[in-house]
Image (cartoon, rainbow over all chains, first blue to last red):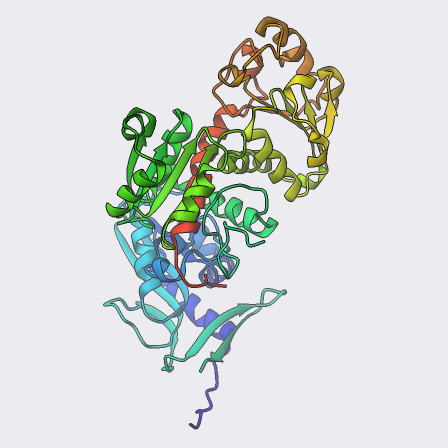
Amino acid sequence: MTSKKITLPDAEVLLLTLAEKIKPMLQPNTALVGIQSGGVWLMQRLLTLLGSTITANNIEHGTLDVSFYRDDYAQRGLKIETRPSQITFDVEGKHIILIDDVFYTGRTTRAAMNELFDYGRPASISLVALINRGGRELPITPQITAADIVLDAHQNLQLIQNSDGILSLELQTSE
Amino acid sequence: MKNPQLDADGRLKHLLSIEGLPKKILNQILDTAESFVGVAEREVKKVPLLRGKTVCNLFFENSTRTRTTFEIAAKRLSADVISLNVNASSQSKGETILDTINNLIAMHADMFVVRHAQSGAAHFIAQHVPSHIHVINAGDGRHSHPTQGLLDVFTIRKYKPELHNLRVAIVGDVLHSRVARSEIHALTTLGVPEIRVIAPKTLLPTQVEKLGVHVYHDINTGLKDVDVVMMLRLQNERMNGAMLPSVQEYFKTYGLTQERLALAKPDAIVMHPGPMNRGVEIDSSVADGQQSVILPQVTYGIAIRMAVMAILAGGQAGGTQ
């Protein structure tokens, strides 16, 4: 089999695109929620990049670790490291922007939505992903992405953060 | 020898005692519990992990707090829970433990939480159940009470995160206490450098020093500069014969009073596994005082039990990462 050569986009450039696209969505009563781990890194960066808009609109933020809501728990068990979800604001009536790094099957989003509803009833939930790699298995798709590519099932695209906080994309291929 | 608590991949299969569990697994349970603490503070105090699973609480010996917290923990994980006080039912009609267990397996139970007056009862059950069923020891005789030991170290870690810097005193009836044994194993495995046991000779097991603890018979010396004071209940129901002159005498020599607590570090915390004998091992003013974390222990106990059940029940084949 010949593997096609894929040039991955620069995650730092994608981040700036994403920030520009999200900016108009930031209204009073909006809250940002990052999904562990990549979505939280992105959210932290967006909080800085969009600092003045965020402060002006009094936008709150939180994090979710969806481990307790994953649909593959029965097959794979709990991952060794879970992190506490931190939603300290009142979800009731909020317009939530969920932030994830790589959108793939949609199962993580489903888990995140289920968890969010256990905090309260949001007015709306939108999904923002840095990159959509194709392959969704549920009727869920991000409203905003900075890039769309098509990968095969045996390819695994991951967002990496180095010790200086610089983001990059990494592609791994399994048999 | 093969550890009956772990599967071939070193993953937790049953929780029977803290003795023999690697630090990695203890930390995994404590860290996972950290994520469960917040669940109780939400609008919906439940996660769907054990949806469709049936947890059987089998209590061959009475306990209100342990049974209730296991029950709440299972329910917060969305499991169906059945609690049986077995001494009050079939056992009094002569059914053996294994018959009771086999009947519950025939009803498709997925997990057993077992308390028994006999040491080794949970091990015995774990050896006989099919491989998809998990067993948690909720206290067996004088042997072990692993979730209590875990919730105690979890509580300590919450208030004193630097475990490798702590001086911990365990005070009271160590001889009859499965809680003390589990605490000592957990603290030692997690690297607490100094553990003291404070008790009269009659309430200490022989060769207790072999567990790596320092023995004190005088509470005033033993409490000096400790960070954590873990009181034990005087187990009247397990005493046969005259181990103590009287409970009044015991309070006079070993009861934790404000004056004695003042010998510990000023920010020392006071713990008790419950149920407390006020005025026997602990003075009411200490139990209800600023330094007491006895009620937080109960709250954290639920998170610990949720973590143990969630780790046991998930995935038959190798966890992620």
